[in-house]
Image 1 (cartoon, each protein chain N blue to C red):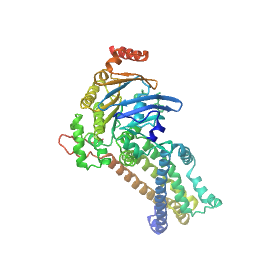
Image 2 (image 1 turned 90 degrees about the vertical axis):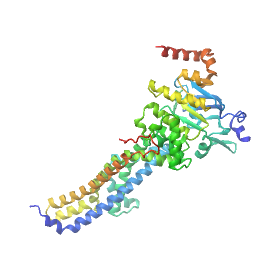
Image 3 (image 1 turned 60 degrees about the horizontal axis):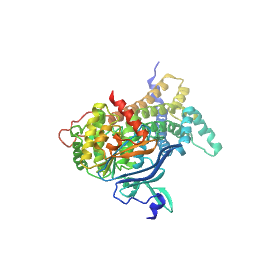
Length: 272
Length: 232
Ligand SMILES: Nc1ncnc2c1ncn2[C@@H]1O[C@H](COP(=O)(O)OP(=O)(O)O)[C@@H](O)[C@H]1O
Ligand SMILES: [Mg+2]
């Protein structure tokens, strides 16, 4: 495997993890946003990423999906290097087509939904089924309705996003990602843009997904959800992973001062 | 006083002028629309390389009178080896001038679509081409039709300036008739009516297109329980 050796300090993933990252870092101009991050995700694992605003959580998720190209290190999806390849000992960007192929197992849900406003809920879900998977309209509609059913929105199929509540929009966005049969789902603060009373319906859908064995990485400020659903919690601060472990350990016995502070601030805010 | 028979006698000149204005505007607008698209696309595709030159071009179009551009093309052209007939100079003048405005209109349309919508498309494996044709263009079309129509109308009206570089357009032929017949009102009114006719056609076309794009009804969902909902 000469290719991997020139690309990363460590060899490519040995055990069967769906997502694996070695020593990734990322800069925006002079600002170092991610520093030397290692990450791995086993099948059916649910990982929650927490940390103060600006600590690099979104950037980490976006680098793992190559929506932002990472500067150093390597990201493997199902054992395949994402975004770069080795050409004559030099690391070069792969084609967009190749990026699409490698990250095909990854589905993404954004804080602000990013539904397409000129498409109905059902059309949002079926668009990629038709354009990418080449399904006929009828096949795509059947499949799309099943996905909307799964998030409890089959009665909203013909509605445009503007007439849906935030919670419904986010559930459509989840159905849209699920339609492509991802093996792992990334969520970037999926409930942060929602009115408090709508958070529950989205978290319920995610809990169901977790129970069905979906592999997930979830950036969230919902500590209760993280405590109940995550197998592992990662605490980030200033572009580094400061602590990680099972939620019980992390929340009850935080080792670092920064995590203690973060949790205290969170408790203070949520008591009144 | 108002002598309608006079207009019948000079119908040849009026029709010739109308025809010249028509084809020069049509070609000029076509050039403006397509060159504008190229400029906007270049700027979006590679802002670092094309951003500044295109921005300068747009500023130049906004900041100088069309008449100066026409003079440069028609009278200044020969000194740099570019000898144009008056009509071709007219087409080029309108096209180059309009392109600056259309570039901005297109760019506004593209920019109005949040980047996240395209990231969502990419994460689903939708190609850039499909994202352009299925996500960007349908949304931006709605937004650019009203300002685009407006700009076409402005170009048609400004086209009267090509009479000054001796194109036998509506305006110049009207003046010729005035000089021959010493009647002022009839020829200019007739010509005004013809300009208005062209502009009315463009305005109505634009309005129809706008309605067509806005009124897209959701196609009926293929299963029971889906409530069709009119999109405002
Ligand atoms: N596209 C960008 N260009 C420049 N700086 C950015 C960009 N995206 C994020 N940043 C900066 O990177 C840091 C981490 O941002 P982010 O990953 O969004 O943090 P979080 O999601 O934890 O709030 C912040 O300081 C932010 O301002
Ligand atoms: Mg964030």
